[in-house]
Structure formats: C-alpha cells, structure tokens
Image: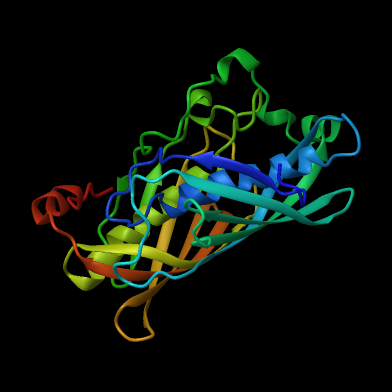
Length: 281
C-alpha cells in the first residue's frame, strides 16, 4: 500500500493476446484492476466481516495509444487502486495500470455491489455447490470454447454451452458463476472476428475505450449467447465501434460498448485464416 492509501500490485500476462496489442489484453487488464479495487476495499474495511464485491459497471480508457508507442508485450505491469466512494451497499474504485515509472497507459473506473456473506448466500443459494468442487486452478489461461455462427451483415453470434465449476475457480468459491472477465473476453473475441470480417483482412488492434455493465450473475452451467454488432468506423478509418451483449435465454445478462483502433495488418495471414474458420451452428 502506498503512503496515500492506494493499493498496488504487479502482474504479468496470463491470457493469450490473439491479434490484440499491448502488454495485456483488455479483458485481463479489467480482471486484474477490478480485483485490485476489491483488495483496496478490503484493506480499508472498518471490520473483519466477510464481504462480497460484485463488479457491476466498468469504464476503461486507454491513454497514449499512438501507433508504435504501445508498451512491450512482455513487461511486468503495475496496477494501482484507490477507493473514491463507499456506502454500506456500494463501492467505487479508480484504478490505473502502468509499466515501471511511466505514466499509466490505461485507467479503469469500477463500481461494485457490496454484499454481506449472509446476504450473498441467501441471494445466490441456487448456485451453491460443495466448495471442493470449485477448484483453485486459474481458469483464465486458455480461452473457453465457442461455437460460431456465420457473420450476417454487421453482426456475429457465438455460443458457449456452459462452464464447469472448475472453469469458474475463485468466482465464487462454493458458488460457481461466470466471471465477468471471461464474459468480456468472449465479447472481445467476437469483436476481433467481426472486425476482421468487416475489413476483409486480419489486423492487429487495441481497445481505446469501453463501458461494460454486468446485469446478472450467470450460473456456471448456463449456456450463454454472445451477440456483437459492428457500428462502423469513427474518427476516420482507424477506429471502429461495437456493441456486445450476453444473453441467457431471453435475459440480457451483460452488455458492452467499445471502440477499438487498428494498429496495422497482421503479420501471419495463414494463422488468421486458420483462426477465422467458422463452425456454423
């Protein structure tokens, strides 16, 4: 913890990047910084009561993303989190990530719903399993399988038929549910594929901005449908806007709006053609 009360942590990349540029992918940045925000909340808690912090809203902004100035993809990143507002049932944190003593290259504002252990157990009793079924192995190393539909117009759809409790390890122990980071990662995979489809060529990209709302806690075994719509180019031809949604049945569980910037043509076209082969549902 710093002298001004901010909580600091160092991370290295765990997710694969695909065609995304930077030291970490945007979904992984969000995961680490959201966890750091909850760590800051725990560090400044006024009691030892066990609390659950459910991230419900996040706003990411990337700073200084000019082509050729992106941080090294192998660097150790340092995250910083500061609590900006706290009530009995809500929490807001401002977080940043940087490399060494450089200025932060990304910031993330996160809002949380705060639940006592008793209230969490009552609200989500339908998720409860034996805690030994949840596991401790990180579920974030490999992307989860998606079944892809052929892009139509400016839209694409991908599906997952549910996760095991172990694929949600730590979220939450004894109550396995889809981590928001995995939901965001799946959304960004649809963004990447739809971007390549719209441009007719593989490109490297970076997220410039994003707003994400987690509206429902999704049970691990639930089948989730990810649908993404391309809204078109903005600020010339280098930035592109997308809207993503995650549904379970007819229920909207998460939504994200994002703008990404093209950083250049991908070097390995053969890899792109292999990665872009569609499994049509």
